[in-house]
Image (tube, rainbow, N blue to C red):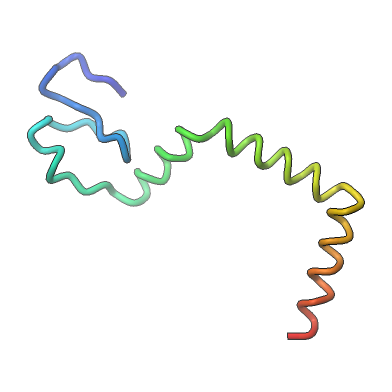
Amino acid sequence: MVSKDPQITSCSGCGDELPAAMLRLHVCDWWRWLDHQVDLHRDELDRFERDLGAYLTSTRGQFDLWYAERGRGHV
């Protein structure tokens, strides 16, 4: 989010808005940071999920799933 107040800035890690003077002391909340990173990389995550789904439904992907499951039984 972008503030109209020049004294307020957004943390690049979590997107939290805070006074510019406090930015150096700011520690991101882990959950807020994670949500912000997911929002920033939504397109990449969507593409990865589509590609993974396509791979896992392919012949090679099905074989790899079978082979991985088979290997787990020997541990």
